[in-house]
Length: 92
Image (cartoon, rainbow, N blue to C red; front, side, top):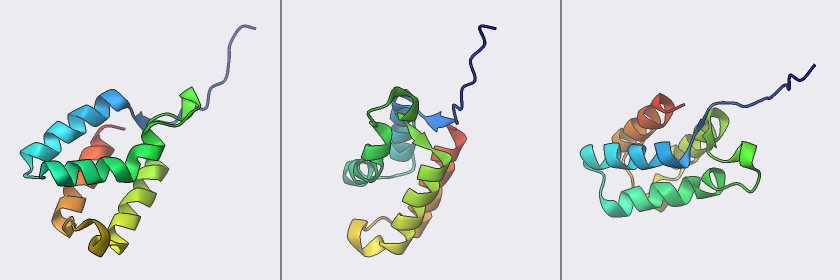
């Protein structure tokens, strides 16, 4: 029939990620903190398959959970993790 079924889940695209970075700067995230967040989500953002590029809701859940459990590794406060989560979810 010419119609194709796609299972495209909402994702934070690379373009949207740049907007998130700007918002985080406005919430007093240092450049080092923004870079660290990008490192945490980098593999999700730059997947090889086009339809998997970007950060999905599931990947946000996993990344935020990891950050909450490993604050001693990235040194980003719980308050800032809350802000990050809100900003990422607003871009889905």
